[in-house]
Image (cartoon, rainbow, N blue to C red):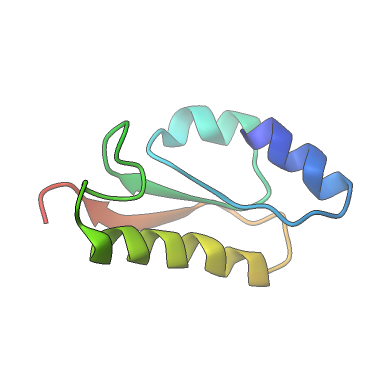
Length: 81
């Protein structure tokens, strides 16, 4: 996804993404990204936890207001909350 995001940014389309796998995502150097400590399949939050999903989504979308490239942002979201 990071490679696609970079290509879109070159064409003038602002992008952002969120990932649970910081290591792999950093290799592709997306223009804007957030990372969580959530599991695969729950990247935006626990199933049924609308408040957590909203926090992750809002933090990720907020990056669109900033010029890229940015250092990835580590969010303090976990499954055990």
